[in-house]
Amino acid sequence: MTHILSEGSEIEIGPLSDTSLPKVLASYGGNKIIIVVDENTHDLCLEYLITSFPALEKSEIILLPNGEENKVMEVCMQVWNAFSEYGFSRKDLVLNLGGGMVTDMGGFIASVFKRGMDFIHIPTSLLAMVDAAIGGKNGIDLGPHKNQLGTIVKAKNVFIDLAFLQTLPAKEFYNGYAEMLKYGLVYDAALFDELSKFKTEDDFNRLDIIEKCVQIKVAISDRDLFEKGERKLLNFGHTFGHAIEGYRLQTDPISHGHAVGIGMCAESYVSMKRGLLSKDEFHKLQALLVQTYPFLTFSEDCIREIISLMYNDKKNEAGKIFSVLLEAIGKGVYHNELSEKEILEALQHVSLLAESLN
Ligand SMILES: NC(=O)c1ccc[n+]([C@@H]2O[C@H](COP(=O)([O-])OP(=O)(O)OC[C@H]3O[C@@H](n4cnc5c(N)ncnc54)[C@H](O)[C@@H]3O)[C@@H](O)[C@H]2O)c1
Image (cartoon, rainbow, N blue to C red; front, top):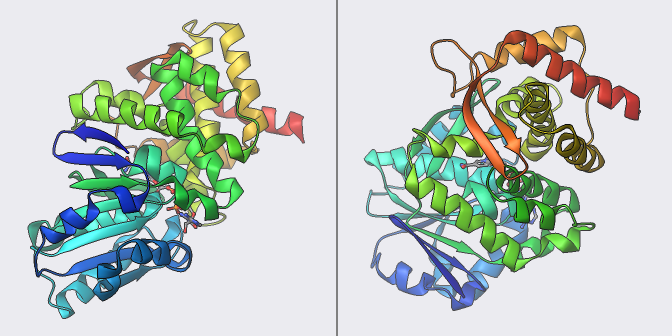
């Protein structure tokens, strides 16, 4: 069992049955435990949790519909109404069992209800284990705009058990992989080298690598919880990625990791064009990204739409678009204002790349 202490949050990595969860649950005495799941984690993960802790059999279950398109206010309203009808109090405990959609939305629901209830995350997707469940960002989308409503409140505890990965569909590993690559690219070249050797889904089930990613997320988010500086690094790939994901959200959704994979290529392209990232490193990174993520072609209309979504990005200041760029593999730099020309050229580049691969 690995214990990672984060300010105001305790993270344990290991089999659930060996964790301090029973002690944590006992500390809530006679208060209610509410388990938030989506349809998949209800069917595939809940039984393992309850078998590990039979006391949880008496918990209330809140079932969310699957998918990013449901990470919205309408669903939150239904859940808050249910919380109210069941008479939940702020002393009750919410336990979020799921991927990043469940941890983001469950954390938001709990952190707002009656001005905030305690919540725990039990991440079940690789992405949630290495990223979404750590660092206190909770939130939902507003139309095509990602994570526009939210709070920064940490889960009291995060329990990471790799056994949940056994039922995770193969394609979902690549979503977590995008965020793992991000850590390597902006912060840790040795981690990137290790990750670039991954060949099959089995490679993702690496406790040492998952622990490393969690440590990086904890270190950075503890030093800069409210993203005044260094934490911005963790948005690498997301300025383009969120806009691409948002653009597709209401028509033909693509996964977060897929969009971030393309976004990392676009942001590395800008880095290379500015003479920050060497051509060799750019081509090495681009080769890895195109063999991992299906690149998409964008029409001119679509590019215009993506750029207009970028103008609504949370990271913008004074109407200007900022992104993280790379000076080298393993060294990100934040707070770079992008010109519309650079954005356009980067989107044209990734689109042409997709065309050349088809
Ligand atoms: N808060 C943060 O710091 C942060 C960081 C990165 C990403 N995110 C957010 O995380 C979300 C993406 O997370 P995700 O990729 O985990 O998406 P997700 O939660 O939608 O999970 C992906 C799919 O896998 C299923 N699933 C999850 N665990 C499973 C398991 N063990 N077995 C079988 N199926 C399982 C889910 O039901 C879903 O269908 C996005 O909304 C993104 O914005 C948040």
